[in-house]
Length: 116
Image 1 (cartoon, rainbow, N blue to C red):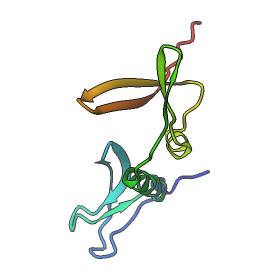
Image 2 (image 1 turned 180 degrees about the vertical axis):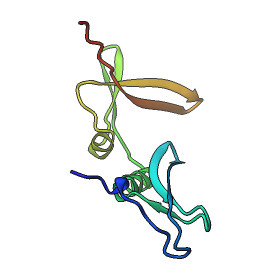
Image 3 (image 1 turned 60 degrees about the horizontal axis):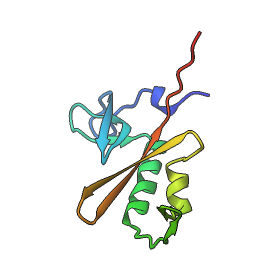
């Protein structure tokens, strides 16, 4: 199936052919068309939708449970975050203390190395 990003767009203000660019916002890479004359941006619909999902999720505060299991403590991560991060069994969670009172979880994809 063809992607809309493969098409050529013309600016509706300047009637000039746009250029394709990658725009970085809050750690996201958004595909965009940019008019070289008026600098107007048009974002790829899928990228824009995913970015809006992130903005909504970012504004929410989650109250989660913290409980002791053996010699460790367990924190419940809400389903909305797990679904957004597309967490599967091949994900690794990196945990570190950023500053006093602030703990950061980072979801990273495991890269498998296949030997020939």
